[in-house]
Length: 506
Image (cartoon, rainbow, N blue to C red):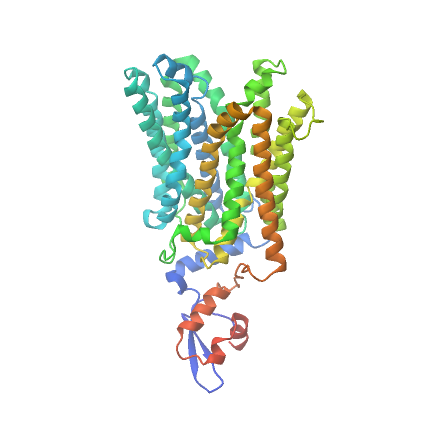
């Protein structure tokens, strides 16, 4: 017979006439009956077909996805709006351009350090509380940053800038880590699709942020952009506290450390791919404008060139997520994306290794288009592969794992985003733009080759464990083996039985 939902245990007959008890999946890992029923309903909703549809999603999931998307848009707008005017204001306060660059860079560096910590303790803190508090902290710090023009010039101004950006980064690290973990838990079969959709909101916010910042700065001075967007973020946090549905972030005790994720070769290789992709996003910020000036472009034309890559990335990210979820080819997408990104960087240099490539406007446009389209191909499926790597080494499919994977993802991404502007500026200064771009090409080829070699080894050898298969009753093979081993009444013959043998007997 099938596993009954209201039965806490199952009696399994043995050949000697005795019976042994197998724990129900509902009690495995300490999950409550309500949590198991909720997960069952969620899996039934998401499992009707392989295609994610926002219109067919339950009302609570729609509210959750829309609220997180809007918060991401507002937060990324707030993070990027200071770019057009802050360097000028800081210079008036006696701050050098090097220090200004560090003020921008410290934001990503703090997320790199703290995202794993938030991911490790997300179930103890509470995912919804972490999300709302993080957004609230970002809003308050944005308002405080708008008051810094009142500070005395010199060191006091510099210290207050660093303190404000550091605390704001803590808030951003908390809410981003929580949002990725919540979405992974609520949309387990469509992780790449919903994260790609979230990246669309974030990308649009990063694109329009400098424009909104410039308009508000012209209208009301230094403080108005920060007061406006900071207030909107606080309102978003308050609305989310009431509008967001209750998050089922219960799970078994955290017996694993996030460092254990690094025992998975797939997680290590995927982390390298994430760092390279994020590095590409930030590499051009301090370097590309001066390169384009050699083509005699106007300031407006240069600005439009900067919009091509991020714009295409923002609007194609959901497409790559949908392909990854429906076709089940995340590693293939990552490989193709990294190799195509290497080609795009060769065009943008152009790389001295290919002297036949011209330094012309059409080549720059083609390179930016390829970068924008295929950056999503290289980045969006990585969260799915991180989860697969965690499951391969025995992590359970629960909120604890989702939180740790989310922390690792955001940490790797922020490390790349930190190294992009700093490493890009240094490499261009020391090597020149064409050779600096060639180094980036090598990084993408290295990441693509590493994933390709891993995929070949995984397919044609038995040295890499496969992802445990979860049945309709909530078991997976690793869990079932543990349950069988824990029952001291089993004979040696019974201990070697597989999940499917047990179900056939039952």
